[in-house]
Amino acid sequence: MFIVSDTQKSDNYADKRGNITAIPHIIKYMGSKKPIIDFITNAIVDIHTNPDIPVCDLFSGSCSVSAALRKQLNFISNDVQEYSAILAKTYFSDLSQFDYSIIHEQILLVAKQHESRFKTKFPDLFFDYSKVQTLELYQHIESLQRQLLDGQQIDFDYHLFVKMYSGTYWSFEQCVWIDSLRKSAEEFKTSPVYYPILSSLMYAMSYTTQSTGHFAQYRDGNSIEAINNIITYRQKNLLELFSKKLKELFDCLDNSLKTLLTTTLSFEICLESLPEGCTVYADPPYAPVHYSRFYHALETLTKYDYPTITHKGRYRDDRHQSPFSQKTKATKAFEDLFRGVLAKKAQLVLSYSDNGVVKIEEIKELAESIFTIKNYDLHVKPLEHKHSTMGRFEDPERDVVEYLIVASFKRNA
Image (cartoon, rainbow, N blue to C red; front, side):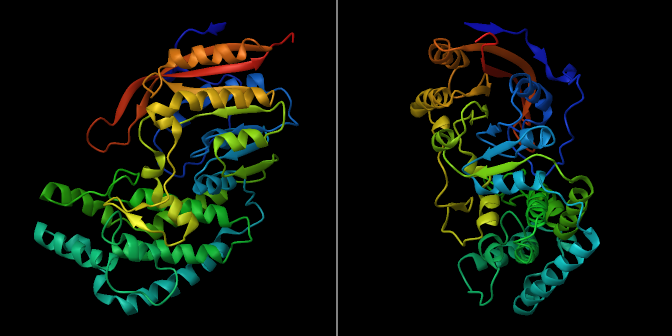
C-alpha cells in the first residue's frame, strides 16, 4: 500500500542538506529536471544507502540527475541516444589538469584551417544577415544555401552539417563552424577534453538554431516579423558561444571522485545488466511524441555518420521510437520496467507527470501489484511545478504535478 505525501510546490521546495552540486547548463531540454532537481535527488539519497553500488539513471537524457550527484554517488548513465553519454561523461570529467588557453588555441587552429576550405569552395554563401531588410532578399539567400542539400558534392571531409543543414536550423556559415569544430574535436578523441568540447558544441548549436532550441522543425521565413526574429539567430556567433561554454566547463569541472559507466541500451537490456541491490532512477517519456524527433541533430553531431535524412525536419531515418510514448505499448513498458527492477532486487525512484500517456493512478496500481508482495515500501510524492514546453511564442509552460513513485526496501526487511 502506498504512503502518499502532501503535495509540495516547486517554488518553495529547497534541499535543506546542502548536498546538491550546481549543474553546468549545456543544452535546452524538454522536460529537464533541473527546476526540481532537489526534489528528485533527495528521494534518491534517502533510499540509496550502499555507496559501493551505483545508481542507474535509466533514461538519462540531459543527465541533470547524475550531474547533481556526481560528487556523491557512483552512476550508470543509460540512454538509447548516444549524445546523452557525451553529456554524462562531460559532467564526470576532470579538467583540472588541462590549460584552457592551450586547448582552445589548438581547437581554433584546426577549425580555422577547415573553415578556410569552405571559404575557398563557397565564397558566395557567406552572408551578412545584418544587411537583410526585405522578405525577398532573405528568402533568396536562404534558398541559395539550401541548394547544397540536394546539389553540389563536397570533396573534403567534415562537411556533414554544411551539406545536410545549410539554410535550415542554421545558416551555411554556422554549419561551417559546426563541421569545423567537430573536426577539431576528433583531434582530442583519446583525451578527457573530448567530451566537454562536444558538449560545448551542442550548447552552441542549441543557442544558435532558429527553431525553439530543439530540432523538431525549422521555421519558415514567410513574413517580415518571422524573418526579423530568425535573423537574430542567424547573426549569433557560434564560435563565440562554443568558446564561452568550454571556458565555463574548464572552470567548474574537476575530479568528481566518483565513477561513471555509460551505456546506450534499451531500458530492458540495461536493467538485465545491472548489479543486484542498486537504485534505479527512471524518467521515461511522458508525451506521445518521441524525443529522437526533437534531438536528432545532437545525435547526428555525436555519431557524425552522414545518415539518410527524411522530412522537412531533416530527421535521421533510424530514429528511436519509445514504447512509453505509444498509448498501446506504454502500460506494458511500465510493467516490464517494474519487473526488471524487481528481478534485480533493486530500488526505484520513478518520475512521471499527471498529464502523461498513462494515467498516474494506473501506474500506481501496477506498481502496487508488483512490489507490495515483496519486501518493498511504496511512497508517492507529488510536486506542483511549471513544465517548459520550449515553445517560443505560444504555450511556453504548463502547470503540472510531477509524481515520484518510490519503491524502497522495507527498513525492517
